[in-house]
View 1 (cartoon, rainbow, N blue to C red):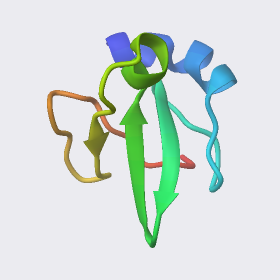
View 2: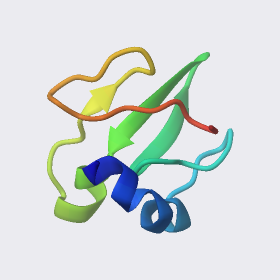
View 3: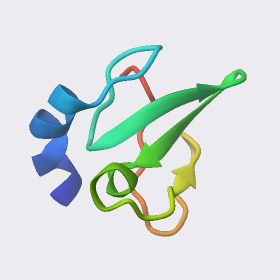
View 4: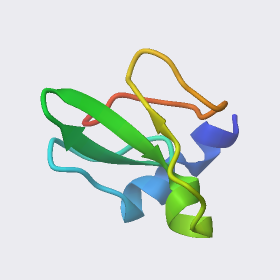
Length: 67
């Protein structure tokens, strides 16, 4: 729910080369894989939490880039 509530706001401030970011994440393209970086990295300057489009790590909610 937290993720969904941030969607509108975060989409406005985040983007990626293959489309717009959703659900409060920044998108980056690495090779042929799409990875997302937690918005926490941008806001709090914490270590970036990386996850793929199939499963989240460190409890970060992940979504495909460009959806």
